[in-house]
Image (cartoon, rainbow, N blue to C red):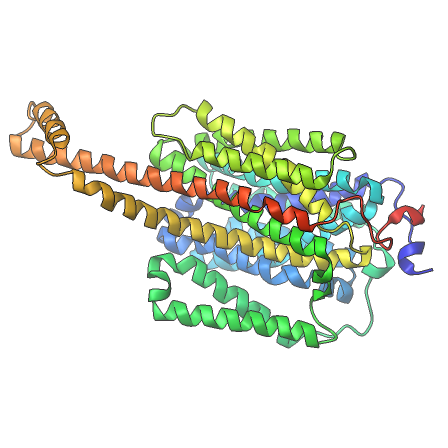
Length: 523
């Protein structure tokens, strides 16, 4: 009998679940909680908003470097020790973020925070999958989904409230007690299976690790700076992208030929994992893109406050929780692929509803599609997380979830970069198409200018009143062109969700296991 077969499941998996989910929650929360506080940080550091964006991107780069190497680090140190060390590093780095007085200090602290937190998500997912028997893995993924889906939605609300009522420093300080508690619980209740313990003879793959760092740093630089530098019309963007692609290919090649590689790419031979990961990457791109542009839509066009814009997105969390409960009740009776299709359809429908919005909508018109979006995300993410790893062995889980988390991270980053470009370019296109109507030969425009000039001329000279009238009409045109750009982006999100549904036909149903991963033999 193998070590995997002789290892006994814990009688009560919930204490360990609490430990990993607490760590998961604070890590995922930090991926969005700083967004609404970014202008305040820029003011504190006397930096531009563009420079302050590195507070977000440095975190993503650092966490992305660690993600695919989780399995390798777990073999070097033992997974439990590595997990506890990561939680402690993340917690200490959070405290340093709160203490930062310059932008350089903040970026360094965020890099350290990302290096510590990057491994939390895949390790937490693999621990949950292992601690629950095979027939209860969907329950484990439902618990995991609560943290992964709800935390990014709570982040902007909590971050806005803390920033408005206290200061941005406290969005990092709140991690400190929770992080130390998570590390303590992990020390008490987490147990490593034999295949997750420290292995002898582990060597450092310096070449692969170097290519991985170069790939992700260059890619994130291109995604961050591409829009402001006209993308591939800038030579340095072309060269940076070329270096990123070469480093990616070199990293993949090094992992294929190196016996002591950082990651094991053989998991992609599993059909469910390959197609499930593709769907997860596309879904995360839609999720993070939507989370990124929704506050901009609400604050810049509808004039919501930071807190109110985050509050109006809370129905997403409510919808996700309801979907998770429904999934847990009916999962055994319904094929996971059908649940995923329902989830993607709901995501597409909610995006299409947003695609028909205007500047006169009330909050209920924001709440309802956000609730539908949350339902779709809950149905989709939980079932996808389950079906994508259902045919893998337990000993493959840490490596597989690390790779999957890296690709989801990249998908989210690419999605946010593309949607930022879409908003800018689409707004320019619509502005160009509408500006032709602002001419004296257009009777509607002429009448509008005349009416506004007459109103303003009561308080100022006729020439100044005319200038004010023309200026306000042009401002309305800019708002309308921006609105159309947002609507186009939402419609594209919806179309993507509908178009990727056929990929489900290439996956096996979740009731299929490979025998090696079935934990029933451990009872």
